Amino acid sequence: MPAMITVASYNIHKAVGTDRRRDPARILNVLHEIDADIVALQEADLRFGSRTSAIPVDMIAEHSGYKPVDYDIRPGGIGWHGNAILVKRHVEIVAHAPIHLPVIEPRGAVWADLSVHGRPIRVVGMHLDLSGLWRRRQVRSILAQLAERAPQPTVMMGDLNEWAKTGGCLAEFAAGGFRTLDTGRSFHSRRPLASLDRILIDRQFTPRDCGVHRSARSSAASDHLPIWARLSI
Image (cartoon, rainbow, N blue to C red; front, side, top):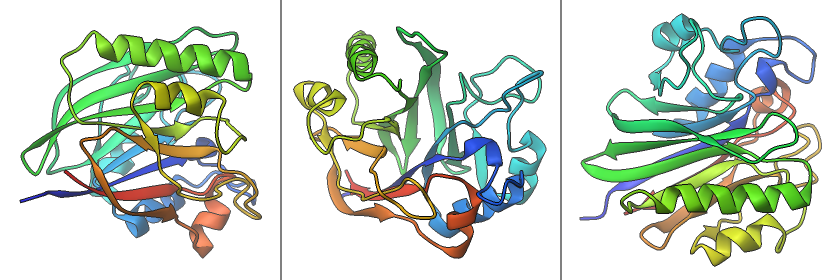
């Protein structure tokens, strides 16, 4: 029987909301509203100092049903260049690593091989460059690095910084066999005008539903709204 899996992507803006308050508990409350099995986060660490997680690790453990995929060797960190993946506690983390990208400004991506309801799934979280040229180079780099590994059903998601509905870096994903889901406009959270956040799937997934999660909390918690998709595999 097909298994149903919910994934989500959320640029949490270092847990600083549109009211300019840093409130990590509010981010966790938004994640509770979505109730996804797997969440890719962007801008998940603090900009200065030790660059620890914008949501304290002990807060994730004590006040959510999630556990982080640990990419960071620094105490209190969970991500790589602000990219992090949270999974529900029933999800098994099989393997994981950061993805190094060609960059002008600090950027990165992360991948994790997971087992969800007994099904193997590869998840990639990313935050791509503001430059269209560099975005395309970064997508090609991600696809090339994944091609070095044994294939698995793969979901890619994150803040792509792509304003175009088609073309641009989305064409690179399509050439690599990935379909972009029409989740909707996620930026700016107060008045969404652009679909900067995207979820992409390979042919082994069937999309059942997808969208932008807009609520009173999510409209205030970050400058981006979270996006989600329900998939069967």
